Amino acid sequence: MDMLGLSCYVCLRFGRSDMAMNWIGFGSVYLLTGLFVGGLRSCNGGISSSYSRSNDISDDMPLSSDVFAVPPGYNAPQQVHITQGDHEGRGVIVSWVTPNEPGSSKVIYWAENTELKKHAYNTKYFYKVGTRDATRQFWFTTPPEVGPDVPYTFGLIGDLGQTFDSNRTLTHYESNPAKGQTVLFVGDLSYADKYPLHDNNRWDSWGRFVERNVAYQPWIWSAGNHEIDFLPEYGEGEPFKPYTHRYFVPYEASGSTSPLWYSIKRASAYVIVMSSYSAYGVSTPQYKWLMKELPKVNRSETPWLIVVMHCPLYSTYAHHYMEGETMRVMYEQYFVKYKVDVIFSGHVHAYERTERVSNIAYNIENGLCAPRNDEFAPVYITIGDGGNQEGLLYEMVDPKPKYSAFREPSYGHATFEIKNRTTAYYAWHCNQDGYSVEADSLWFHNLYWKSSSVVASF
Ligand SMILES: *[C@@H]1O[C@H](CO)[C@@H](O)[C@H](O)[C@H]1NC(C)=O
Ligand SMILES: *[C@@H]1O[C@H](CO)[C@@H](O)[C@H](O)[C@H]1NC(C)=O
Ligand SMILES: *[C@@H]1O[C@H](CO)[C@@H](O)[C@H](O)[C@H]1NC(C)=O
Ligand SMILES: [Fe+2]
Image 1 (cartoon, protein in one colour):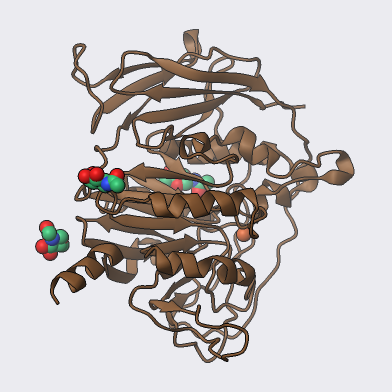
Image 2 (cartoon, rainbow, N blue to C red; image 1 turned 120 degrees about the horizontal axis):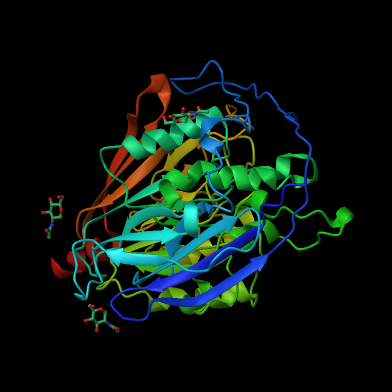
């Protein structure tokens, strides 16, 4: 049995002299094995977008693919990935897996061109993990100091999986001239749960596949339904186990009690990650946390308020239609009240962007139960089109409801380029024809600063 379950993680903090904190190393054995490619479904439905791909289902790349290559050397660290390690962006969590035995827990890191200077922000750091002949070196750049006009570019990727299309999406993100600095990942990572016994070798292969990006820039994780990944009939009854053991997040730094919901500040953005597959009703931990969290956001410090959750609240595709409805009924009122700028989701394997609409007027007898234009409501973006083995979804609500501004079943990724406190440029890039085409875009006007200027000018 291949046991690639030994993982290490180290949290680094910058702007201080202490080096490695919060180290945890552990071994875990995951359920295995047997190679199987199957369960592929074909989706045929009314195609109402202007473009459709002829070959929408793509197999997972074989384990022998270049992207899954195991790094050379005995016990060489693999699946190296980083994420933000604290609330403010001064810490980085570095995680990796050693295949043969528990490895060294040490990360050696140093700033570029420095002699003992104190470098906290916007600094390129090199880091090394592993021992002896199996050392591996990477680098990352610490984010700028949190502040209202700090430009910053987020990438958006969802439902990635590990097919040839997944590889195209990642390649296009990497070659996008917008140069994403941090990925907001909207859930559904490896799709290992599509294999018999949820073959965790496919979590390992996914980790090796995305390492080429996530070892160099943080990905901010959110959990999708494919992260639930339990197998009670085999005694694995704990939901989210492989995901939470492989992908650490700094949830305690935002007062959360679960890695499935948390928040971070980064540059001029405040990012709230929620869990569509954890209890969220009144008085659940997630609800209580969010009710404390939203009033804390200081828009003079972080003007851009972004929410990430796997299941969309607005989607006009037939598949998964209205799955986010209870979450919408619970939380949309707060997203409108606190002027969330944009909500990014995945789950639906296609692309969609809504108009600014809200549907919060209904009170059980007034009949006001349809979305209406609301210039202070969030934009909802579904970006579940990373390219996993389930393929694209074509069937849509027809005719297109007015609240849907743009929808197209194509693989791709997006970028959200914050320019300053008032303005951000958003663009969706689809993978078509081997080019990274900008197929949908929008200038965002920050809702908080927009309303302030409205008030100021009257
Ligand atoms: C994945 O994409 C990379 C970068 O474009 C390429 O070098 C590699 O050969 C691709 N691998 C597969 C299996 O498609
Ligand atoms: C909000 O942030 C601004 C800018 O950093 C700061 O001056 C102000 O004191 C903060 N407000 C609160 C209530 O913390
Ligand atoms: C913010 O950025 C936009 C786009 O680059 C620019 O037009 C606008 O003048 C900037 N606003 C401020 C206050 O700098
Ligand atoms: Fe999903």
